[in-house]
Length: 136
Image (cartoon, rainbow, N blue to C red; front, side, top):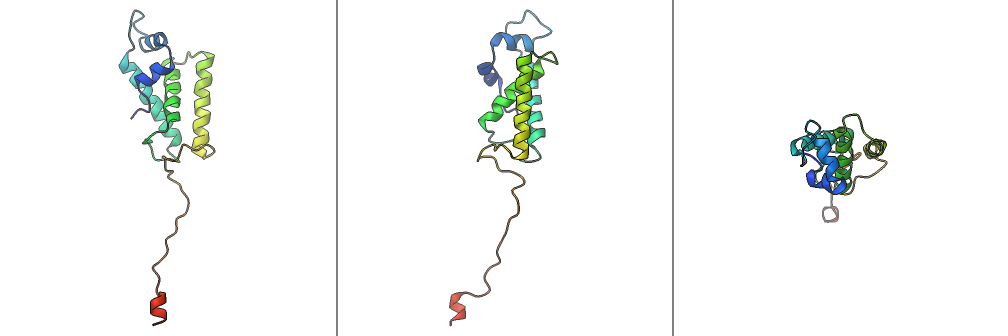
């Protein structure tokens, strides 16, 4: 399950950039290669799951909105195939820093995500005596 889709990428990044990045073998392409974009989104989602899986049940469902943004930043970086400009590299590095902070619990994902490691739980045994039995 990818945390973002093509429309999320198109909201954040220029169409021309996405067309070029997803059609590196076809410089004359005029549309986004949806299959290439989906591979990058799936890979980005797998990175997110790998980083958060020690603390949260993955895949996150529902995923907080911030996860969609991080998925888009990571997917964009992956589409550059190691030739990312400084701004893209910085967004990727920032995404990883935030994910690490989420994994350690320094930053909360949100109330809708329940952590795997919630600490100790306690359960009381039923009362052996109650007020009615004691005073009857």
